[in-house]
Each structure stands twice: as C-alpha cells, then as structure tokens.
Image 1 (cartoon, rainbow, N blue to C red):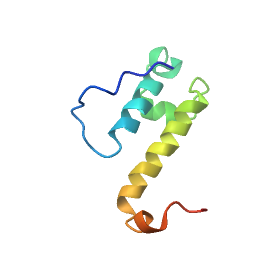
Image 2: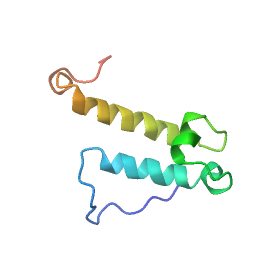
Image 3: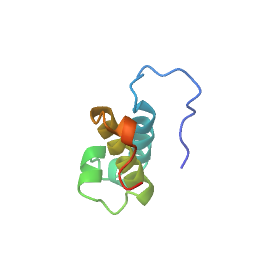
Image 4: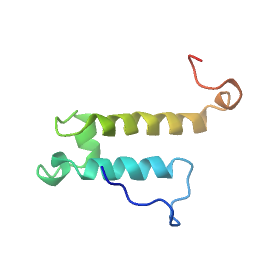
Amino acid sequence: MDYPTFDEKKADRSKCAHLRSQLKFCLLRTDCCKKDKLTPRECIKTRHPSVPQECYALWNTFFECKHSILDGRRRFRGLKGY
C-alpha cells in the first residue's frame, strides 16, 4: 500500500501519531470504507473481509504503542515475553 510521506511536519505530535495515520490510510483504502460506506472503526471491529491483514497488524501495533504510554514499568522492563 502507498502511504503518504512522513517527512513533512504533522499537526498531531502525539507519541503514536505516525501509527494512527498509517492505520487510518490503510483502512480508508479498503472496500469496507469505500463501497460499504462504513467507518474505519466499524470495519476493523467487525473483521470485515475486505480489510487486509496489514491493517490488523497496524491496529495491534497502535494498541501496543498506546498501552506503552500508560505502562510506566515497560520503560524499564521492556516488552513482555523477552
């Protein structure tokens, strides 16, 4: 998939903004959003068949990024399972 360039300055400067924008563009290019006119949230929550696995991987990575903001211990201990 083609993503917009991330070299330019973005208005959203939060920690996970780059993942949020990649996930948004990934979901907006699916048939679920284009043809069925569903929101990206509805497409990913209902596991619509037109959503590629790449979008689900971005969704999980975005979740982990947001979770790491709340979990202060992760900075010292690292990810679970390592």
